[in-house]
Amino acid sequence: MSRVAIIAVVLFSSCSAFSADPPNFLLLMGDDHGWDEVGYNGHPHLKTPVLDEMAASGLRLDRFYAAHPSCSPTRTSFLTGRHPNRVGTYAPGWTIRPDEITIADILSQAGYYTSHIGKWHLGPVKEGSPTNPGAMGFDEWFSHDNFFELDPVMSRNGGAPEMVKGESSEILIAETIDFIGRARKGGKPFGAVVWFGSPHEPYSGLEQDLTLYDDLPEEYEEIEVKLTSNETGEQVSRPLRAVLRERYAEITAMDRSIGMLREFLEKEGLKENTLIFYCGDNGVPPSGVAAMSLRGQKATMYEGGIRVPGVIEWPARIPKPMTSSVNAVTSDLLPTVCDLVGQPFPNRPLDGMSLVPLIDGKVKLRENPIYFWAYDIGSLRKRKPEPMFASDELIGTTPLVKKLKGKYIRSFENYVQPEISENDYTGARAVVDNQYKLVVGEAGEEEKSLFDLRSDPGETTNLIDEKPEVAEALGKELRYWQESVMRSVSGEE
Image (cartoon, rainbow, N blue to C red; front, top):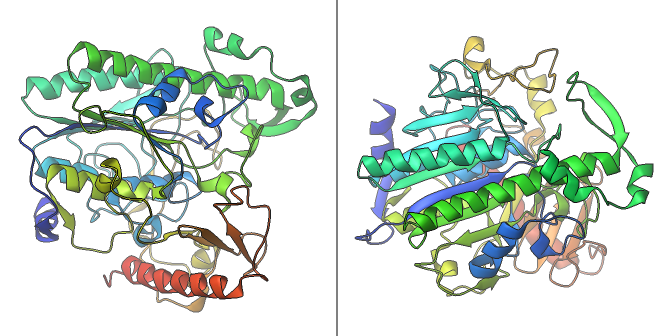
């Protein structure tokens, strides 16, 4: 049975009636762009006028989360509506699985023309890869296996990598505009997933953007951070002040590029009924930490690792500014798209919910908690699991600046899940309900912390001894959810 036929089988009854004038979708995501790093969240240095304007005119999601504190896993959740552990996308460089149903599949079923543009990081983008964007439902793609900087080397529809001169965010938006033209020529609504390479390290920027940050505080000069050298691809130590100048330049360039896209939509009469979504994929990495109001950073279960900017602009459905404090997560995107285009939810466990009631101002609290879990991949590897793909299918082609395992390309992995043991339930994890957050295993093996996020968003006060009954209840819910996840990754549901 073909993948398309399988997808048809595993869909069930529709969520809502199909609109006579369906919206277009532009689903954007930055790379390592944390919650604090936008002007509208009060950052003291960053200039993000476009995202600030979108947050002021559209739906500002003040409690938006990445489903995982690192890259590839969050991307799987974005596409599938499922926690990445259900798919075995346990860590950066782990693939999605070919039998997953993606946003591209949903949009295609609804008659849309679709494209993936930018960073993929869910398997090689080359032709023949079982997990390239085309294999996962996109009609076309202009993509990179991993991250990229100025003058990126991209693959179009799986072809040989080619360098494109220019600032990478501007290049992706130019490609997005061209894609929209192709979709309109074909008479179809469009849906593009655009994943920027910025602001992932190593950093680089245009002079016009770098000069905006010449006056960063002198005290940053005394702090040394480690990151990749643009010259050698190896780790180096540099003063934080110089590093932040480059990082912030990338964020500003990305912001400006989103503005170019919005201006195009306005000019072409497409802005009113085009849903633009933007978020980050995880928190700020160690090389970019400064002026942080949240605890933790990328790869941690604290808010600084998983809470990210989130904003939706859609004038036809969001005519007035809205700010929401309802918890939302990247896993919500697929159910939301299903709801908006009248397509059924996939007949499999989902971890997200439709945000349509939130968009319509009808929701004040989230019905179910959001769960987070960094699976212990070391424990899995010790069992020597069976690889899911042939080794040649996992080797990338688009070159990186960063040297990884002696190579300037990214290779991937995924495995057939072995028999489940108690060790499979370890690893840092968390559960967030409408008030409290339980964190397990972040500060030490199985150590627990409980925070009241409404009164203590910075997670400064551990309430584990004061409210043991709350921690116990959340812990039971977390374990019950983990068991469901392990059934999914083992192919049982």
